[in-house]
Image 1 (cartoon, one colour):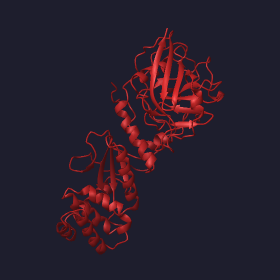
Image 2 (cartoon, one colour; image 1 turned 90 degrees about the vertical axis):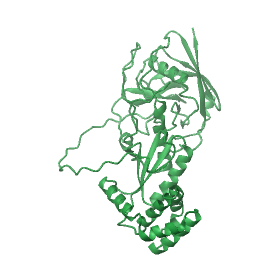
Image 3 (cartoon, helix red, strand yellow; image 1 turned 60 degrees about the vertical axis):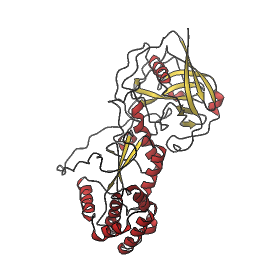
Length: 423
């Protein structure tokens, strides 16, 4: 059974892996199989594909000249008494620092609600107030209204009401908002006299002040501010990037600790039947040329890694790409294996099967199939098989980009991979 990997990259810094520039290609051959060395997995840039060649860059560390900055207060871990929505056992946790009187916060709340609807088992939300008291007189009042609703076990209904109807109350004066707030409490079936008294007495006003001061002390730049599994989410707050982040985070539950033991027979003939929802592909694998790649592919097929996964990238006339359960083009099995370029194999025809590199020196589980000759990739990718039957299925697939079209249905779904060994 797969186990969470302690060495797996945990999505800690999206900006880092988006800006990662590859620094060379491994072109040496690999005539004899050697035990794979353990290599710490690294996410690759979202644009990296089988036809994207690396560009050398210089890595320089900045020279610090300014005095050390004041130490920021740590962001607290999640506690049971917080405003939580979702299963305690969820694999991923989004902490959102937000302000009810904030248009971007309202927009993000809608996206997070849809995200959790798509991932009810995998995602938990934690809401923390960071009211901008210096900018809005209603930030405190709206936060107090939500806390008064929480006293009646209705925080999330009021949370949803405040954000869903933001355009309705955002232009109101503070006095007009108080009247509006009581009417919303009444519509939600709350004890409206208690809400009215609480708002007029400012029973939660000090909590709003404290939340504001804590946000400043932690160095939060402003609301909304997201953390995924304890680390800042640095990509844009858009449906596709949020979806990708959750999928990659949840994938850790399926990843493996290390490369599997070498069990393939280098003298045998290996065939792989790829059952797609649009038909079937038959592949011949090359254990004699790429034993590490074939061994990994056979292992993952037996573990169900490919079952129900999308053909997530299609460049018509160039290649199709699959092998990532997340469909983002960034997921891997938790281990990486060395490159195995062979001078005996070339991208001289359609139907060449090769691995998508995760770095200049390593491969993961994602693979692509060429739809035309790609001589520019000769010696720069690990070829581990060829298509014997079914190329017409691949040639007919429409264009698809993994991140741009992440929420759209894929053009094909790989339902399962069956391995046949002959001889």
